Length: 132
Image (cartoon, rainbow, N blue to C red):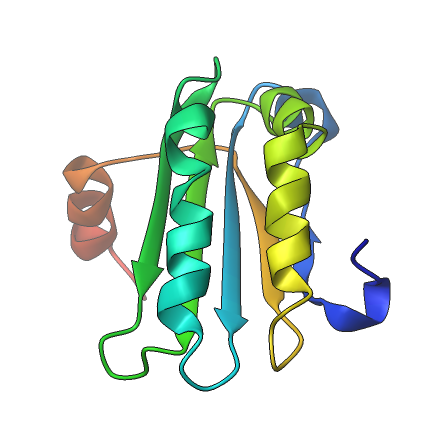
């Protein structure tokens, strides 16, 4: 089991009234022992398909750093905190936790809540704002 001293990261919470329905991102960055990045990435790839089939999973991807093959990144996006919480309780997520134990440095895990999303109109409004 993953112990608290082995993980760094944060959980950003927003407005309590909105947070149960707001989109949530989970990011995990691991530095593996030299030469082990490919094996860890392959291990993580075994949970991608099952995770994507879970209701509420918007995206679930594994990346390897092309400049440092011993760095592996997992990015997942969920429709709500409740749906992410259900995934965290699955055997597949426990496999991820077990892989995190093999990291050569404390893994960086963060969960971020998305309260709102705006597009190009937002950028336009900011650029056109009259700032004194």
